[in-house]
Amino acid sequence: MTDIHTHFPRPGIPSVVDVSGRVDFMGSEHEYFTAGLHPKSIAQDWEQELSDIERLASLKGFVGVGECGLDKYAEAPRDLQMEVFMAQLLLAQRIMKSVIIHCVRLYSDVMSLIRKTNFKFPAIFHGYNGNPETTSQLLKLPNVYFSFSISSFSMPETSGMKSLPLIPPERLFTETDCDRSADVAEVIEKIAAIKGITASSLQETVYENFMKIVSGR
Ligand SMILES: [Zn+2]
Image (cartoon, rainbow, N blue to C red; front, side, top):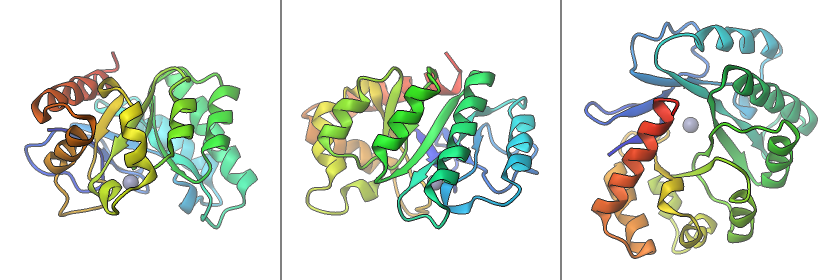
């Protein structure tokens, strides 16, 4: 089992820990981590924070920039969100790292910024809930991945669930995000059931995906 995006790592489960907002962090605490500027908490001195993140990026275990992205319900104006997200895509591009994307109902804007920056490194949509139409558009971009948590299955049929049949296992991740009681094994089982494959083969593929991202291969 693996956890591509968590704020509360579990012992024994290889995890990418989001340390955003704690940019004084020195990298020794977690094997793998990311840091970024979340669209819901853009500070006035975000440019300073971004250069702090760039310094973290040279530390062992730094996997990528994020979570970062666009959120329809964030307080920050859309153009500021776009500016901050674009700066993070450009940073990730420059340091040749992945991005962990937070996107709420602004998928077409996220896609246009990925295209505009010509971003080629892995772009992982965490807590993915895009509909099938969005998903097929995203799959046309290079290196796009989709991460699911147990809350992706909280309702009888979410957009994310409807998209799962379109997403090849090579593009999938599991995560716990902020949920301290969530279990990635359950997510594997739910996805496998929808896709009609065995949990063990899905688990193996998701593990390979995880290792590919954390090793920067
Ligand atoms: Zn998160």
